[in-house]
Length: 147
Ligand code: CMP
Image (tube, rainbow, N blue to C red):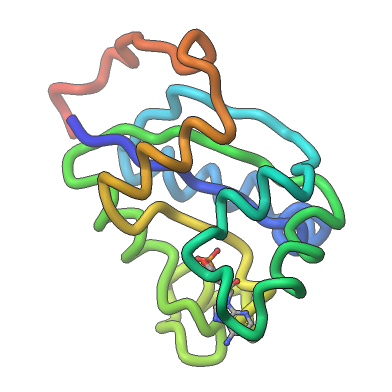
């Protein structure tokens, strides 16, 4: 089974969309193995978005993601990295397809509600920023045979 890291960004939290977003992942049959509300510090935000360090929007992105609380989650499921990227939709909310999280709730590039790891390599780097090993639980929901 594959795992991914998802963030509900400050706009998602402040627009009270956390329950809606978590519910979509639950209803898809993904397992939530770790979940926390936190305020990200600048150093961790710069590490998380290190691949964008040379982009013109980097400083704004770091300011934004550290401005207010976020939720970090570890999800598990079959092909979960691509499944969650599909559920999130295109980065630019104005281009994201209806039915996706961004397509339904975002109209901005920066304030696009969620972040989701784009590869196994990204997941491994990102999860270490947000979770200690013991904060990621391993348990059976009991419905695995139905999903
Ligand atoms: P995310 O999936 O968290 O990964 C990188 C983030 O950078 C992205 O979502 C957007 O929030 C942000 N981003 C990407 N492109 C732009 C852009 N052109 N202008 C501003 N922010 C951007």
